[in-house]
Image (tube, one colour):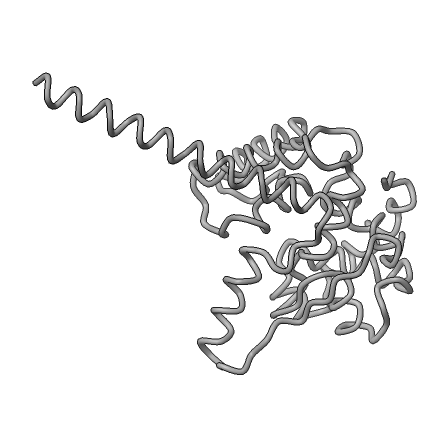
Length: 231
């Protein structure tokens, strides 16, 4: 029994050391990306693999642009659509989480998530789309690291450059050129609102582009986006 207890204790210590090493690696990457732009993300790599299984020559559409070359209209539209209190919270919007929980409870299914832009970014950079309590816990830790090391401007800059906007389309520049044939810097209010509508389900909505729900949701974002605070 003593041998078993010692073995279990050592196994626990090794597991904790491995967990700490993983968190330190994440922390180091986030610290590095405060000043350097990530070449890709976990989501991009997963999507590239998926696309290349169907077509070995398939490539992602992605082009990094600095914060100043992204339309303020798109920044306002995305904040309005995805995280209205982005500049106020510290990574997690607990009011939104509570509302999402109540809505899911009312519907009897997971209809809303309540994730902030910071949480979505943490997931996109490092994790998968798998849904589990373990992944959600890791997402929360990563979100806290990002909020600790980056300011809101950097968070929004990286998010807008790496978020998925359609089949193999990542980042504002690629989305603006694919859907409208213009650079991200020149997107108008209606174009920006429409792109923001695609974000919850970019493959489906990017393929549809229009319809009763998308049109109505675009109108709502247009109505409120000019009040959005951007960093």
